[in-house]
Amino acid sequence: MKSTTTRAFQWVGTLAAGALLLTACGSSDEGAAGQAGPGTFEGRGPITYVAGKDTTGSMQPMLDHWNKLHPKEKVTFIQLPTDADAQRQQMIQNAETKSDAYTVLSLDVVWTSEFAAHQWIDKLPEKRFPLDKMLKPVVETAKYRDGLYAVPASSDGGMLYYRTDLLKKAGVSQPPTTWAELKADCAKVKKLPEAEGMSCYAGQFQKYEGLTVNFAEAVNSAGGVVTDANGKPDVDTAAAKKGLDFLVDSVKDRTIPKEGITYLEEDGRQAFQSGKLIFLRNWPYVYSLAGKSDIKGKYAVAPLPGLDGPGSSSLGGHNLALSTYAKNKATALDFMKFLSSEENTATFLKEASLAPPYAALYDDKALIGQYPYLPVLKESILRAVPRPRVVQYGDVTAAVQREAYAALTGSKSSAQALKDLQEALQKSTGR
Image (cartoon, rainbow, N blue to C red; front, side, top):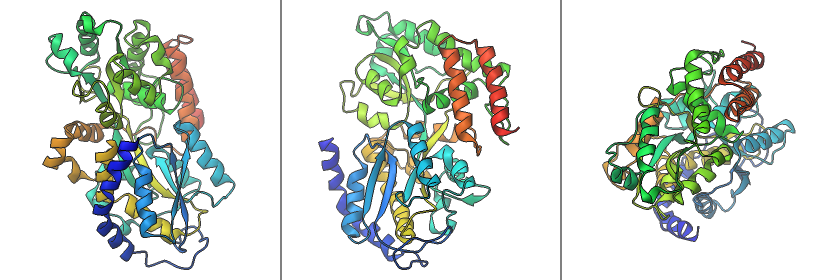
């Protein structure tokens, strides 16, 4: 962590000019310090930034830089648990009490509709942000009913991490593109003495938001959907069953290790880095951290495999939203523009492997030379399928987690779990 912080301060100076420019361009709606009503952006002074725990160590140096340039408008970092469900719940509790303790919220991209529909976040002025320079699927996650309610700060696409050294030694020249190939490649690698005791594959299968992501990816990668483009549930299908069966069968045949049913993102990362896994489904942030581990130079990434070819990731990432009940909204708007700028999202790419929202960064030859996974990540994002964009997202994800986990643990068949999930989703969405 110390080395990350040290490097982060090395780029602080290079950001000064850009940050000063952003300050000079400040909001034309600014006013005196204090609380503004919904849709207004007045008031200057201290604010808070609320997000899940920063496991990369890259956020605080960025906030320190802002605070140095804005001593009267300092940002305090409020770190919530790493569990996405717990983050969402604490943000909702703050909103329901109409508290001004939270100012700028780092929302999982799938929460935008829910928070906007409940008027917990403000509609934002689109012209204040360079949305035309961002990837279109990423921008769409920040909208609700054609209005902008958040600003993309990072995107995310799931990728398949794999051990290049072991696949090469086993005679496997390319990473798998289908689930069948993944299992066949595992069988070859596990015959190596170096792979003794290793497991094949893991993702995020504990009963939390990560399971919703992994379940949706399996369903989409088999040609199914959880909900259609209009939010209507359609998960009790043959295609969806093929996706869920891949996960269930993989638990049964130990392609997914027994302990994999308990994994969150960090559990899988640590297992992969410590040599316990051949393949891992995870987010881009793992790339830089794995490069500091014992497997440095021994891994690469590929698109997620699917039933008959490359699969589809769930579209991840985080958007910046402004709490309806916050104070000092003029400062907040400037801070959101600062944090989501192309320069600063490029820094988060370099420091923490966070996927930037800006299209040009994925095509930058110099960056690709440093971060060879960028083309794979761009493909993952462009092919990604959003999780259900519904107002009742909390009920929907809870139902997905409950039924998918029941299937994975064997308390229900895949067919029964999908039938029950279809009924639960229809009840939750009224569709």
